[in-house]
Amino acid sequence: MHLQNVVQKGTGGWKKIVKTFGNNILLENGEIDRALLGQIVFSDPAKRKLLNRLLAPHISFGIFWEILKLWVKGCTVISVDIPLLFETKMDRWTNPVVVVWVDPKTQIERLMLRDGCSEEQAQNRISSQLALDWKKSEADIVINNSGLLEDTKEQFREVLKQVSAPLTWKERMRSRDGFLSIVMCTAAGVLLARKNLA
Image 1: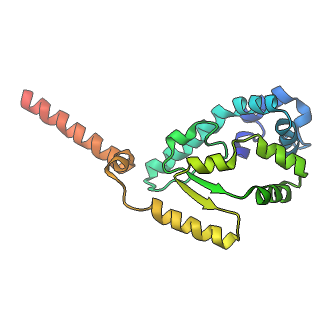
Image 2: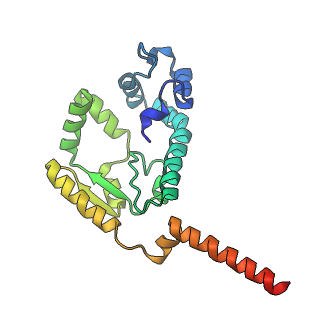
Image 3: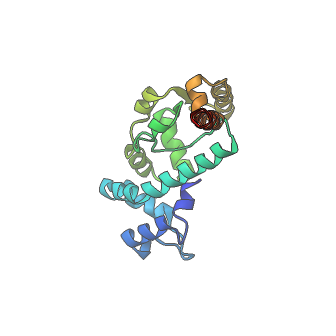
């Protein structure tokens, strides 16, 4: 699930944004001008908080729905990319928390290159979030993304091995197979109890 799905033309998130920020926020095709919206909300903390409040329910529901579908399919590892993980308190629902860290200079340079924005705009965007160093201190696992792409990929492969390791009993009980085992044992217990009481 991507943020663009939440703000796609005609969705609930799209309607809330247009109602709040006006039709000037739209491109000719009716989609939201994400660059313009970014300029607005990253230069005004009150508008950014308002946007987060408008979209949070849609984003949270979409994330949990996608996780539920993957869980039912029996996926053993589910990776969720949530830029505002700590700000939205969703770190409570994830284990382990993996933070992809980058040094501040590289972060600014990459953001400017990716979004075609000025250094000031990039700094405003970065300043609007919790400090990456603080997130790094709260993480269970840190991937250093300051170097070459191949270095980052190698770190990711190591993290994938780590999170794919056998589950602890507690983790197993939260898995789909563990849940089904609990349901089956409970059902069998109820049936046996009924039979013995009859």
